[in-house]
Image (cartoon, rainbow, N blue to C red; front, top):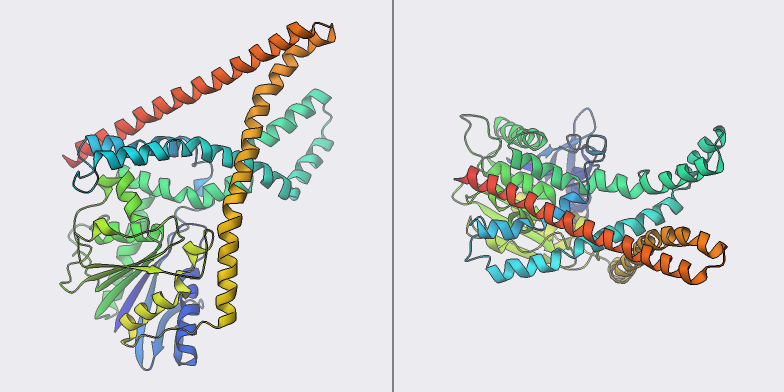
Length: 445
């Protein structure tokens, strides 16, 4: 009997959600021939096709890094520090020179560092859009204001504070989804914390599969779950005296492992993820998925095959369409049941996918550009409005020329202050990255 460990990715996942998505794909491949066994909680625990059974073991970990526990943990200090990691890692020998030349590392850094302020502008613009869309939140705030007896100045101050500081849907998304990555990796770097609770769950499910009599164990992981699985299979979080895991196959979909190795190279151990001599690693990535890609630099660890998927999603959906991809399901079903089954995609469905994908690829960048422009407008307003207010009394008394000079001087002074502050922040974050890499080099040594 085969056991399949399923490791989900980032986000507010529900228990069993990833398994159910996989079952949708298997149902499309096998139709009525697919049998599903469920437990008392209605969670799928096994599937059967033509008498061949596969037991399912979901490594559920979303509750460990839930939105509530991660609230406020994502700040722009994180990406501003992270972009400097590769340069220090390269200088300290943590990024092997045959694979990462100095020119490549510096080219990546020179292109990534400007993306941090651009990303911040995108964030500001997206926050503005979110405040317009999220009417219930604004109505609750306005109701609270009406219940208080505030002066005009106090109301203006409260409104400005609400607009600038109150978490929006964008902030909640960053905490519940994006923050999973730095929170997990920070825990791995520290050597304790939530990442090791997640790894313990992986090892527990692996042990359960063997205890249930599974002759072979396969691992299927998505997104950040591929990093969790690789860390666990390389021995991280393994209980003292326990035998290293020995899965037969390792399926990764939408894996950011290449990027993890580029930014946190010391956390990726140069070891095979399995002691099974016939172990095979198959990595699936979508051409439009900016998170994943080929895992070329992992081929030295074991037999690895990269498969690029086509169709089924654009810039927005491409990271979550793997479980229903015909190419993916063909390979997976062949490994699990010995007979590859490829679901037939109807022409109308294929046309719908192509249309949606083109729409995503066109509207996604345009929406991002619009948000960046709006964020830039917000920054310009912050620079110009105080200058206009300072110069207003001069205009009131008819000193237009003096007022214009005061306004220009104040605007340039504010801009200079912003620029200086940004450069100082960049310097400090660069030093933070250096300290992190030095600690990593000391630990490696």
